[in-house]
Image (tube, rainbow, N blue to C red; front, side, top):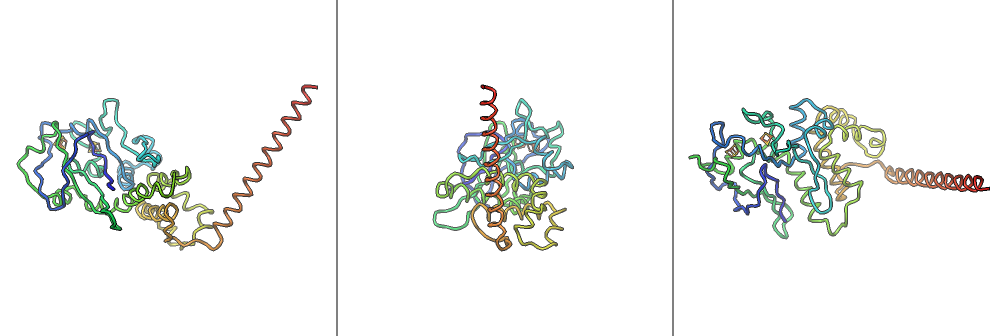
Length: 295
Ligand code: SF4
Ligand code: SF4
């Protein structure tokens, strides 16, 4: 089972698998004749951490960022939602300028990795996945002709990918688990897909949800936790990973209030019954009106 980041350039090439210590020959710089070529045909899948960095860089809420800078797509056959950076009609990233990337300090994971790709592979019968890499060689990219050799590990350091990998790891594991356990747990419900989207990408909506009375009534968490996530996007993101694991896979790490879920289910049942009753009454009234009109 493998999980692959989309790279910022559309490609059907089958890559060679690399380890951290393997050496690659590559350098990207402003003087390269192909400078910006990759960003002009961008296909960049975003992680939750990418969105936190970019929305903070741009001073936007997550809702504004998602609306202005992303397009939704389905990450797998079950319809698990993902988001990609929006491009213009020619396929160019909206952040590319003549002088380079306008969000360079906070550019997404996939942009940092390119032309190295990241794969999470879970060897059969092993509980944890392992990172593997691959090199994409495309004609337009002249960086492979530069006289610079370095290990994949050093390239990852140079691109500050160790931080990004740390922040992305848990989310990629959730994706991997969701896909590998997919057929055994059946189709994910619409509600679970909505929760996945909100926890993964829409931090500000997720924050309102966590701070709501009904959430506080369901989970048994300290006041200090709520104070922290009110302002800390990363703490909120990590909490979201835990909540997804709890709701999607039943891995209980967040304490629930005794009887709270049962109470909410009761309330929901009552609401449903009330809705059914009022629909029935409306239908009966429509029938009465119809009869009266026809006599
Ligand atoms: S975010 Fe920056 S590096 Fe990534 S595709 Fe856009 S312009 Fe290029
Ligand atoms: S060397 Fe490759 S990665 Fe760098 S700008 Fe050129 S096409 Fe993009």
